[in-house]
Amino acid sequence: MKVICVGRNYKKHAQELGNEVPEEPVLFMKADSSLMRQRDAFYIPDFSSDVHYEAEIVIRINRLGKRIQSKFAPKYYAQYTIGIDFTARDVQKKLKEKGLPWEKAKAFDSSAVCGDWLDVEGVDLDNLKFELKKNGEIVQSGNTKDMLYPINDLVEHASEYFTLKIGDLIFTGTPEGVGKVESGDVLEGFIEGKQILRVRVK
Ligand code: ZN
Image 1 (cartoon, rainbow, N blue to C red):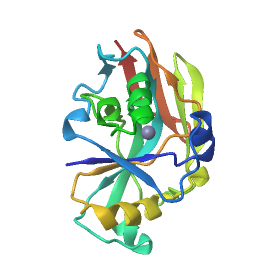
Image 2 (cartoon, helix red, strand yellow):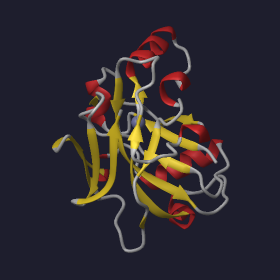
Image 3 (tube, rainbow, N blue to C red):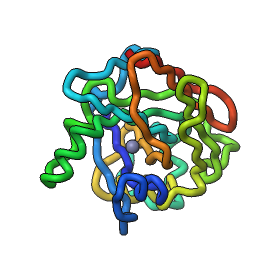
Image 4 (cartoon, rainbow, N blue to C red):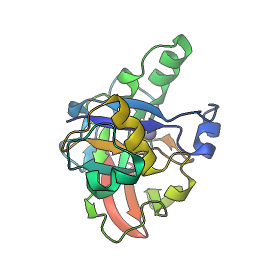
């Protein structure tokens, strides 16, 4: 399986990192080995001293497809959750300055974690409130209605380039409020007020 991620899909987040608002979805990938195996604990890697959390809505592909039109995209996923796209911001900054690929900053081991999976049926994924709390305080608060490219458009765009396979994940981008994690932090993800994810940082 692969993990497709979307960068700069919320205007205020693009701006907080000094990036331009993109003219088409910005896509990058994480490796299957970037999925955190022990879901409850994230270990800060030695090569970074500035790992950031990025809370995002994630969908899981349940049907093989390529060149999927946006209007048919809902047939290709049935579950969603909140996840964290851990990012070694210091590493990413260096790579970006040199115009190099982001994988070392984005696709390292355990850099992706997902909460409990929820059924899409009856849920409006284009109007979903989600939050991340760090040590009990809200640090990110977003709504999928603020996405520059809504979920079904992302499925269309991604599947133009990459065949989507069963089990593939799409991380749909983070709203503003990203920040550094420290050893001892507790991160909790909520969708519509319900806790779906809990990760301790070590
Ligand atoms: Zn992200």
